[in-house]
Length: 176
Image 1 (spheres, rainbow, N blue to C red):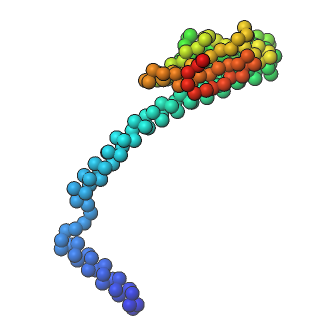
Image 2: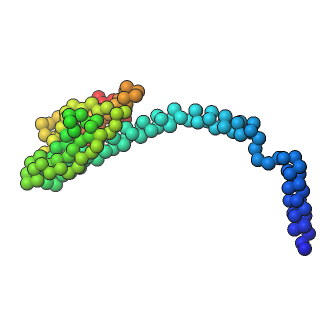
């Protein structure tokens, strides 16, 4: 046999005999409690940051969905050379919205429908429906704004503004 193998087997046997005699296996209850205490302290420090992060991500996702559907309505109005409307469901943007063709051959055709965005986000809008004309601009002129508000913090976190050209822009902070 190899000398290293003999030494390794003897040291393993010695460790096994020592732990059997003294009962030293695993962790003590004190060590386990210390690990749990440290883990819970780290969790308590990280948890508020995680909830703020999750809230901010929900606002960004809602703004992204709304911007995407505004761009869809605008591009479809140009493509179809007809009016396309994006309107809130039940008179409240928080309940969701629907993109429909509002004129031309496909009048009434639903292009997209979104479910509600949740109770933590409130949407304050200058209008409950927005119609893009055949040139991709808002019907009625002017620009529209949708403010996405954090219900928990009671502050405006995102502003979606539709320019005169019909292009929607999302910006952090309150609408101006």
